[in-house]
Image: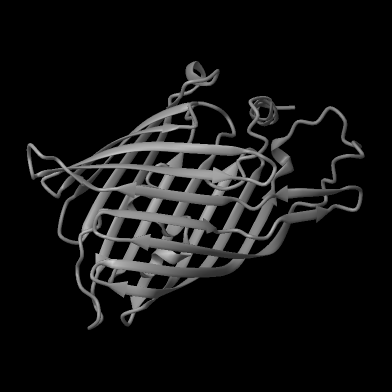
Length: 303
C-alpha cells in the first residue's frame, strides 16, 4: 500500500485510534464549533472561517476547513449554520449542522445558555489512493465509497465577565456501519468540557491574562487535555501558548484589525515520534462580526 495507508497505521500505533472529531487550535475565540450553546452568547452576527493543515509534509495528514455563520435572535436566542470539510488519508467527511441556543438566565453579566444542533455527516472513501497487493481482500469492501448519517448535539455554556464554563457533545450519535461483511463503529460520541478565567494584570491594566482548558473525553477511555495560557495586550492583540495532551505544543495569536474583524494564526508541533517527520500544524482564522438587527450591538469577546 502507499504511504497514506502506512500513515494511518502509524497513527493507530501511537494510540490515537481515530481522529474522529476535527481538531482545532483556535477554538478559544469562537467555541460554537464545539458547543451549540455558545452561538447566542453574543448579540451579533458572526462569520468565522478556519483552515487547518496538520503535520505538513506527511502524506495523508489531516486537512480541516470550517465555516460558520451564526446570529443572535432577539435577546435570548441564537442560531446559524456550520459547514465542515475534514480529510484524513483516503477518508473525507462533509458535515452540515444547524445549531440553536436559548439563554435561560441573563442578568448583570451572568449568562446560562442551553443549545442543541442537528445535521448530517457524509463519509467518503477514495480507494483509488490505495495501491493494494490483493484486490480480492474479503475484509475490504471497495463498493462502499460513501454513506450519510444524521447527527444531533447538545451543550450548556455559562459566562460572566470574569470566567466561563462549557459542557457539550456536538455529535451525540455513534456511527455504526455494516458493509455487508462486518459491522463496525466508525465514530464514538465525544464529550467536551471547557473553562477559563480572565485576570487583570495588577502592574498594567492594559494587559489581561486568561488561563483556560479544554478536556475531550470518549466513552472508550480516550481522554485529551488542552492547557492554555493567553495574554491580551491593549484590547487588540492576543498571544497564547497551548500544551495538548503532553504530546503537542502550540502558539497562537489573534489581532483585532478593525472594530469588526479579527484574524488569528496558530502553530503547533508534536513532541513525540512525529516531531522530525513534519513541518508542524498551521491554522488560520478570520472572524467578522456584524450588528444588523436592532437587538444586536458590538461586545468585545474575552471568551
